Length: 133
Image 1 (cartoon, rainbow, N blue to C red):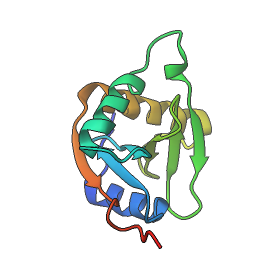
Image 2: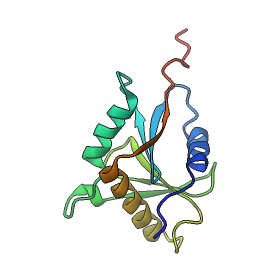
Image 3: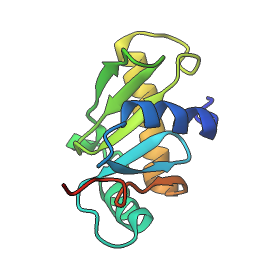
Image 4: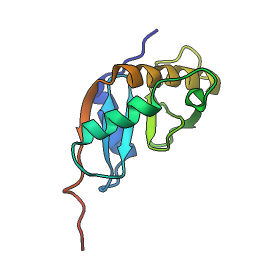
């Protein structure tokens, strides 16, 4: 099962989707993104702690739940989970089937891998880009 998307493609898609100048985010190896709302300290560490808690799927818990968003501004989907600020991108060429359940399960698998491997590949730090006026 292919579960890694080209990092440059992921960064480009997420920069377009999360274009808000006040949104900092951290991207993990398999396409999971943690959007950070409390921008205090090291962003990669904050995101890693969030994903460590909300990334791995645990049988019989809400951590295995997911929702699928069909993207309008980019190709592919975003799979949501049990934390509002954790999103997993699934590219249009990744799932073998484009049904919502197949995309969701594929994204949830990627989310689980990122939540257990915890390998950061990009940090988008927007703390200095917001105009306080």
